[in-house]
Length: 395
Image (tube, rainbow, N blue to C red; front, top):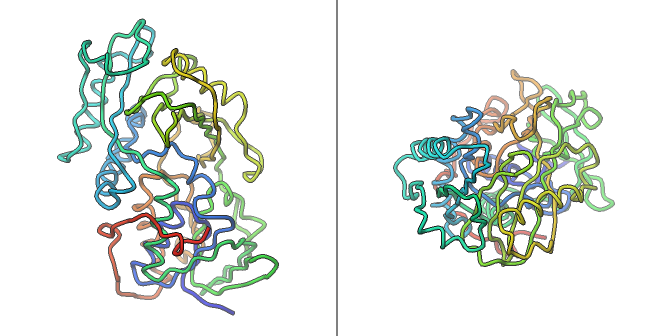
């Protein structure tokens, strides 16, 4: 039987982040991904590296502070993959939030950002509204600007895995996880490569499969309880390029949710929705109602732009089960452990693209009691991330 020290399940941003962190800490690590890196949620985000401005409304100040710190660090580590972007918030006579509320929120965002190169937020003068081509000005009473960052989420995921492999991590892709046995002193993972069944002995397992890894009761021995989490569909649409160079954070006129409108890949990207999803993650497709919802918002704020939907796609967030709206639920990452005294199987639930590095460091730290003592070979806080070579990262 093959052996390693840590097996990571799932090749999204959190999986590759754990692989990088573990390899940097000196451990042998093998990552199993059934399709391709970033094939799921990590290629279907809103493409943002951001603090999460809206989380201030629900009091998630600690989360925002952490994300803003990571945003600044990732801008330094991956300058070719992450760029600053100006965001505009237009407020109208019928907006649910008043200018003072937005001004105070942005002031707090600036304060939490600290002393960085990020431009401070501001309120645009009326004479500057002309530089916002196509924006509806009827009923417009204020426009604010602030700074965040944009990334290619797939390219970032691949870059982190490339870094992990340079540190010694193994990537098995395609490789489908089938089951795991959890013992007091080790684990055994079974997986399939094509028609070949394989197994590997390890000291611990990290479940970073996201929506594909919520239900583990039938795949582990002893069976682990199903997690009290649910999947939330986030749909995005792409419309023709409209000359936007900056991004917009707007309020849905029907339910007051925040939606982004931003340039992306020669098109205009609008998203996202938040709708409970109860089906098979492999069969997720954007619902027509979600597409219509986003198209209506785009036409509301940019009535002269071509709102033809050229592409639509959806990803799945994992959020704690609750009777409240998905939009208002906490976004803190949850790390679930099979046994706090002997953590052999650990699951990452939820989490944000921006905070993947901190989550990975936390995971590796929590596994220290079952992993041997090793000397770190690198620090992920200083490792530069570069676009992956095709020969280094298989499709």
